[in-house]
Amino acid sequence: MAQLHGSLEDQGLSSMTFLNEVAGRYPDAVSFAAGRPFEDDFDPEDIHRYLRAYCRYLAQERGFGSAEVRRTLYQYGRTKGIINELVARNLDIDEDIHVHPEAIVVTVGCQEAMVLALRALKSEGNDVLLAIAPTYVGLTGAARLVDMRVLTVPGGPRGADLEGLAERVREARRAGLRPRACYVMPDFANPSGVSMDLAVRHALLDFADDNDLLLLEDNPYGLFHGENDRLPTLKSLDARRRVIYLGSYAKTALPGARIGYIIADQTVQDAQGHSGLLADQLAKIKSMLTVNTSPIAQAVVAGKLLENGCSLASANDAARQRYARQMRQLLTGLSARFGGASGLPGVEWNEPSGGFFVVLSLPFPADDELLEYSAREYRLLWTPMHHFYGGTGGHYQLRLCVSLVSGPQIETGLDRLHALVHDRMRRATAAAMKDAYNRLEFAPLKYSLTRQ
Ligand SMILES: Cc1ncc(COP(=O)(O)O)c(C=O)c1O
Image 1: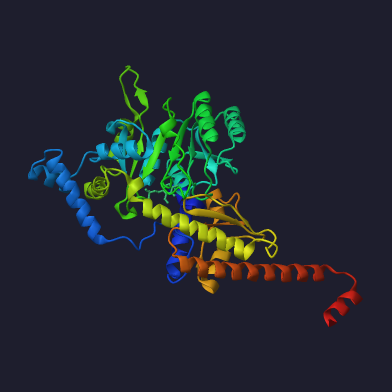
Image 2 (image 1 turned 60 degrees about the vertical axis):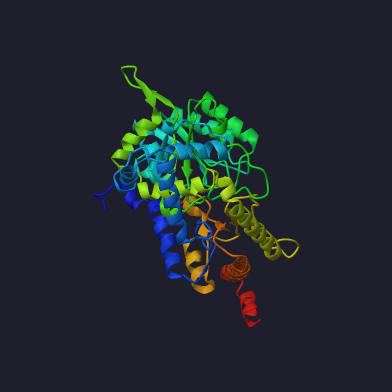
């Protein structure tokens, strides 16, 4: 291992493997763990229809002959992507983001978009990335792969602590580091579930401009905004081109297609004064990473876009309502079991208005060992929060995900969670009493206690 890249011994890179491995051993468990979309409505026939819809579009709207249609699907494709104009239309309709298709690179999931952005931004040894903590493990893993240090800033209840961020930037600069960008998830963050209000969004954009920073905005959950209206994305407010937007169709179309994208409409200039789009530089990196994103997978997502007039907001309206219902049921169920006068001290949770995730705080460690125990003894899966803090926090918290569980499963899962928490608290009390007993020095009292 000492001869391989340091990231391979990094705990962060093993997190996903560990969590998937535990889930794999208990396939019958109720899972509040995986952040996957609800799958009962998936129908393989849709994929065929989407492909046909895209081929029809190529022929009828783009004027492609049959040889060109065939080539488009079967051959290597353009590095930047083949469905950029549809992605741009989708962003225009659903997000109020107006960008030229050439400012977009279609990627192999949002995960590749992160790698492209970080690879491009990490140019000097002292370049660092700021990130709101807790942080999505895919981002910290991607940073590790390109040897970019991540400095975390607590997000707090409003999703970003601007004071804390400013202090972190000052500290970093004093230490000779060069913060390049800050990774943020303004809508229903993974794992915290927290969203930023409009004032925080504007303040963040001003902060980025004042401090010559870019913002990496990641937004896979924005369309699942519960019953409330949506807030504008940072990118839609980005008059100063401070935002690189990371997009994913995993939750709004299908994760199996592995289609994401990156908007990089910033202008870059070389030493000779030639200027172009940052997206073109990212495409150069992509050409050496995945060459191009599968045209077949792009065609499937394009077909879904075309079938829905390029609006995934309307296509996902039923899903939005489902997730909102599941979130409500989970929050009501937590209150019924852990809240009110009969509530357990130290058991608390947040109440996101949308998205997939809720964070539960406990009065005892919610570590990997407890997850194993929960899976084995209670057939219940969840995610220990320490994985999102790189082991530096979140030890008493766990993440509950509502996306994959039906109504009855939520009730069963919560009953099991309740039993698990009581089980642990009983053990903790017994251990504390034993400890106190062992520390008693007055022998006659010890004797009389034993007799009782
Ligand atoms: C915050 C966040 N960003 C990105 C992704 C990954 O997206 P993709 O599947 O498109 O790579 C996820 C997936 O769970 C996520 O939660």
